[in-house]
Structures are given as structure tokens and as C-alpha cells.
Image (cartoon, rainbow over all chains, first blue to last red; front, side, top):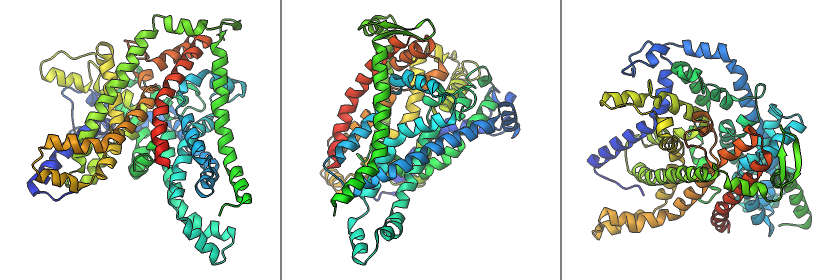
Length: 276
Length: 287
């Protein structure tokens, strides 16, 4: 409901919105700034905002001391693997529900959504036990499967809403022009579906990257991703503000950047198409 | 265009997703139900037989149960109140014409992308630390005694951390809803001399009601399950033990699986009550 307003009013809006925006963003900004300070400057009183000696020392210390690369690699494998695996399973399902709907399609979609509502803590021990039995505890493969399963309903839903928007008429037109099923899939449907699939991959990568219940409870040393790496800073290392900040910045930076590209998909993906 | 052949092909394409989710739902659920009726102490003798409803009774009669329900309610209701009220105000503000709207949007949304362990630790140490935290500096600047947030005001502190994480979500969804509001109706009301409060109350709020309901339902489901924020800040101490954290402690820390599973069944029932309402709204939208 954008309306034209006086420049004065626009000025006030701008000031107010920027003030609130910066306030909300401040903890992140402060973390990034602190990561470039020395430990002494990080706890200086009064706090130093910008006038400190910028240093990259914390980053090198964190990387050396804590084997950061391994945690990062685990995060990439777990988030990426679960997202890709989820898409491989979800694309055909969403595809068939969008293009060959049956009477039960709606029920199946809603039922899938309901599995997402199952509180993780309610099934913690069974999963823990199954993981021990199958030798999956503290393994990346196990986490890939679990994160794929918890995000599968969202992936199916998002893909379904995207596929639904592809007009069926285009398919019929292609068929009239003599396209075979293979050509239809390859040259007509795929190009139209790719943007939707890409946004789905993006949002689910972010969700899997930040997942912090199963990653904390099902990993120890080998498969621990960045969520667990940061949790290990809980104490007493957490009191070294500059190093904590450097570790935090490295854990969130890639996702912040990806996240900014996925704002629109966020609404669609997390409200299951109920808010447009 | 759906022929018989394409229908069976469709069923085949759906099968992997359906079977996997069915297994993911049923297997652990049945196991939890089974354990909840057993005396099951993995470190102290394993499965020691049938317990009837003992676990269910013990879980709700233990001294930790009611405080944990209270904590859960305070956190969920506190965060909901803050995120919905500020979310509406922020959505209305961000909808106004201004310079740099896109950048402000990005700033506001950013906390949602911060992993829970990071936001919990950053708030705990860099802001709420009673000696070196930024709040302590601020308090001392105004001549006040710094507060030990996570021990003396643990619940408000956790509500604040979690609200910061979820405010972007509420704002974003409410903003999407605000943007679909018909501006002509508002302008007509403005011309007729309706004051801003009335315009908000009778036009904007009814228009947002559906989005608000969805925000409340989705957030409730996630908020009932918050874990990392408590795990890394207080570890459940200082009155911050929620129902899910209590179950986690029963199952993994004290390894009383029977008791914890009974708690898990309660949690599942609770989540389902909320879920039913959410599914109704989503289901209506599918038609």
C-alpha cells in the first residue's frame, strides 16, 4: 500500500526505520567488529566502537586451535547433503502431486506437514538408540539422513507451490506441437522449474545449516558441525570475546549472505503457502 | 489429462517421500510409546519390565514438572507477545515510503539467519556478562549496578534472546500481509476523517488477523521446542528448564528413558493440539 508522501514525512520514516534496523542488526555488527579487536580491546571499558587496532589474529588463532576447517566441512556436507538428497526425493513427489493431482493429494500434503510438527525431544531417545544400533552416532551420514527427513516436508511443500504455478496449457501446447515426453520434460518443464528448485535448495540449506537440536545431540567429535563448534565455546573460552566473535562470524557469514538472497522464499517456505 | 498409466506413475513418484516420512514418523513414535510404559534405565539395568502408567504419573507429579510448565508458558507467551506486537509495528513502518528500504529490510531480517548457538552465546557473553558485557557497561555508565542477567533475570534474558531471533520472521510475514492491503480503503477512511488509531483498529488489524494467527501458530510450534538457546546459556539452571529441556534431561542426562518417554508423549500431544489449528488454516488455503 505504498503511497506518495511529503519529503518531510519520508525523512521521518527513513530515520525511524534505519534506527530500528540498525538496533536489531547491532548484535551482529558488534560481533563482527569485536572479531577484529585484540582480547584486551574487546573487553575495554568503556567499549571501543571503531577506533581500535584492526587485527586478523583472532581468525588465525581460532583456525589453528580448533580445527575450524573440519567443522566447516562437516556443516557443508551435512547441510548440502541433506538438501540435495531431500530434493532428489521431493522433486518427483511434488511433481506428481502438482501435475497429476488425485483426491488424496491434499490429505497427503497436510499429513506430510504434520510430521514436521512432531517435537524432536519426543523422539530423541528412539533416534539415539537407532543411531547406536546402526553405528550412525557421530557420523555425517546419519545426520544427513535425519536433517533430510526433518526438512523433507518443507521441501515437498515449497516445490509443490512452485510447480503449481507452471501453467498446464504450456504442456498441452508443447504436446500439440508434437513434443515427446522426454522433450516436454527437458525443454519445457525443466527451464520453468529451475528457479523454484533453486530457491528451495537455498532455503533448506540455510535451515539445515542452523539446525541445532539433532546436530548437538547426535554428534561428538567426528561429525560435529559449526553449531556444535560454537557450543563448545560456551565456557570458559567464551569469555575470550574476540575469539568467540571470530568463530561466530565465520559460522554465520556464509549463511547471512545466502539468506539475503532468500528473503522472499522464506515467507513461502515457512508458512506453507498460507501467506502470499 | 490424467490417464490410468500416468496415475500409477504418479503414485510411484510419490512413494519414496511418503514411505520415508511414514517410517520417520511411526518408528520413533511407537518406540517412544513403548518405552513410556517400561521401567527403562539403560545405565542401571536396562529394561526392567512393564510400568503401566507409572511413568506418566511420576512425570507430572515430580517437583520439576509444574515449574517447567510455567517456564515454558512464560517463554512462549513472552516471545509471542514481543514478536507479534513489535512485528506489526515494524511491518507498518517498513511499508512506509523511505530511502534505502531494501537495506533496512536486510538489516531487520538478518538475525533469523544466525545459528541459535551463535546468537545465544553472543548474547550471553558479549551483552549479558555481568562484568564485561555491553549491558554492564551501559548500566555502569548510568550509575546503576550491573545485572547478572542469566542468573538473576534468567527468564527475561532468554525471552529477549529468543525474541531477537524470531522478530524477523514475524516482521517478514506481517510485512507480506501489510503489502497486500488495499490502500484505497485506507485513503477513503483517512478522507472521512478516521483517526489513525481507528484506521489501524478497524482496517489494518482485521486485514492482518490471518497472518497474525499463522505467525502465532508456527512460532508456538518452534518455541515449544527451543533447545540450543537454553543448552548454551544456562543449561536449564536458574528456573529456565522448559518442558522439552526437562524431557531432554530425563532421557539423556539422567538416562531414565521410561520417564522421559512419558514426558515426550505429553510434548507430542501438546504440539498436536497447536498443529491441528495450523493445519486447518493451511488446508483451507489449499482449495
